[in-house]
Amino acid sequence: MRPARRVSTVAEMSEIRSGAAVFRTQADGRISDWNDECERLTGIRASDAEQRFCWEVIAGRSADGGVVCHSGCSVARLARQGWPVRCTDLHVPTPLGEKRLTISTITLRDSDDTTVLHPVRETPAEIPARKPPAEEPALTPRQREILSLIADGVRARQIAARLTLSEATVRNHIRAILLELGVHSQLEAVARARSLSLVQEEQAS
Image 1: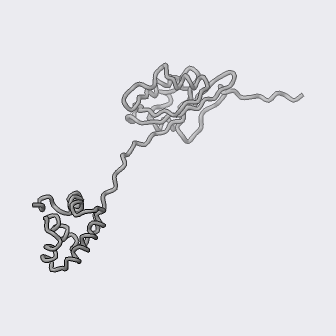
Image 2: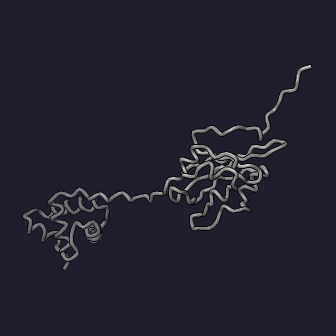
Image 3: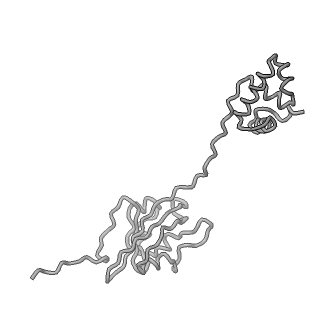
């Protein structure tokens, strides 16, 4: 008769070995293992974390300062009952200063015991997206000169006379200016040019 294969229970698990920060809690919420990476990440020593309740050690708060970690924590309760729970983002006071940590929950159950593993990682600070700087329109020196005259209220025929150009040439320049600025009229072109500091407000009279 073949001897029955011995099945290891969750309670017989030995130390946690992982390159990531992980701590383990028992059914009552006490931390039973706090690995080296948890120490490095938080500055909290294993001797100060183990055998204490996880909510006392983590003492996590929400972004607006609300208490998240407490003795009635719904995450811990659901995990003990075997329900899947989502990752939790917490602001955690540590000896290294306040850290924003994301704590995951993995529940291991058998008929005799329940243990919960909590991988921990630091959540990078959110960096507000920067607007790309507005590209300056590629206007030629002549087009800039004509644009300035338009902003001064000078008409195409008068611009042609001042610059010794044909009126057709001036109008070709104006069309090119409108296209480059992405506008449909000379009035819009002047407004756009002022917003980009291509011409000064005081030029209009």
